[in-house]
View 1 (tube, rainbow, N blue to C red):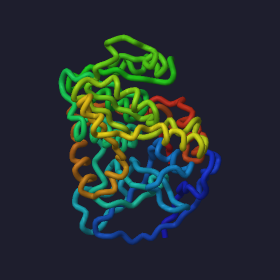
View 2 (cartoon, one colour):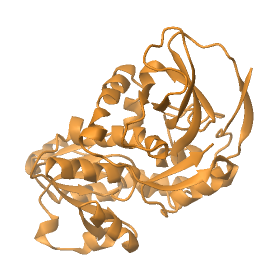
View 3 (tube, rainbow, N blue to C red):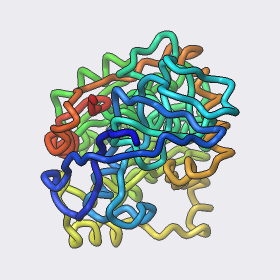
Length: 337
């Protein structure tokens, strides 16, 4: 048996509920398995929602969260031809990523891009796949489009701004913290705080072709009024239902009630579209994992650079969640094993 460590969600609650545990795994691999010694695991806001019990697609407790890792191939199954022991790789895990060792299918693994460090590799899968689904598959963003990215300082927003700028779109990025505006501007976007944007009557902050919304709730309806004809708003989540990562049924309920019920008949008045994207559910489909993994060639083609905001030792998982949920982070937060 092989000994390794992981971090389960055993009970709902605060960040302090997350603890390391020792585990044992069988040495037997299926023919298409790839066993990876993990160096870094990515942390996503979705896992904070899971820890609070607000993520309907999560397995029953106890379960190990985590959707992305980077590390070194340890062993491969008899039918694996793409990878060999010693290869540095990145993998999507669809749960189970908070672990020092993972075993996944060959189609979930891809070589570490040459321009990307091992830490940056762990910041790629969820952020790139989400940004690609939103901007390419759904919005079909193009040169000259006017784009608003609400979650501009996070991992998804960081790559989304770069992807939009690559195709020649004009980008506005929002942040809840004024001191993060410089981070957005350095990526090539105009920056505003959420409050500045909400209070502004500047015509330049209207007529968007695309808005990427992460807060949900009442912001969706307000932002729809800023779309141009044929504009699209893509909803990625409901961060307004959580404050500082604390579990609150009341707050989540209020956010859900404030989320507009969209009438198709009313959409005719504006000639706009509203999309909802649950990227992690898309990644539960093998054909989409294979499709999106092939698109990772865009990382080098577009010279995309994920930003690693902070790395925590795996034993400091509680502090890592606390850092992300209190909006101290820019870019991606990682665990190091």
